[in-house]
Image 1 (spheres, rainbow, N blue to C red):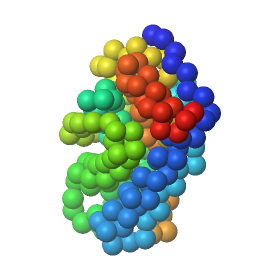
Image 2: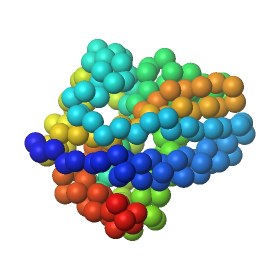
Image 3: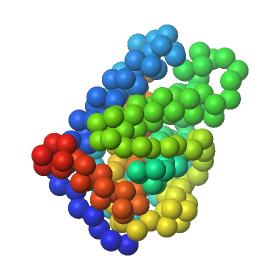
Image 4: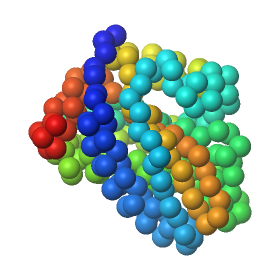
Length: 199
């Protein structure tokens, strides 16, 4: 694997795109839940893939991930990560306690968030991105990460980790979005950021 460098200015540009799209996601989720919704993005980090589990909690922490494959101008995975207990609570809050499968409820929430992020990338950087149906996996964080790395045969050492605070009513949910990209896609993303923001 090789290391593709993203400096702080480019990371700030990515965070700006994400903050814009987070507002759109919060509006859509508020309409879906009929509750006040805020989606804050405290940090965006570009880091070694192997260090991501310890950043989130640990290799053996039980997490639920909702993953989609991205294709087109960006080939890779976009993975929403939340601990198992918070995942079940999120499903209950969003469904209003109705008897709906947690997988369906949270997948719809993640579809809205993913759609907002990817739409922002598409519109601002002139990307074409196709997305697969979501897949939900619950396992230890180390095992989950190994699955995605092996499936994608990643040629880069790093990923973009987005830390998110999702507020629905008075309840806060801590989650993460992990963007894993093939080397060519990451290089293209950096080039378009340079052109768009004169970095």
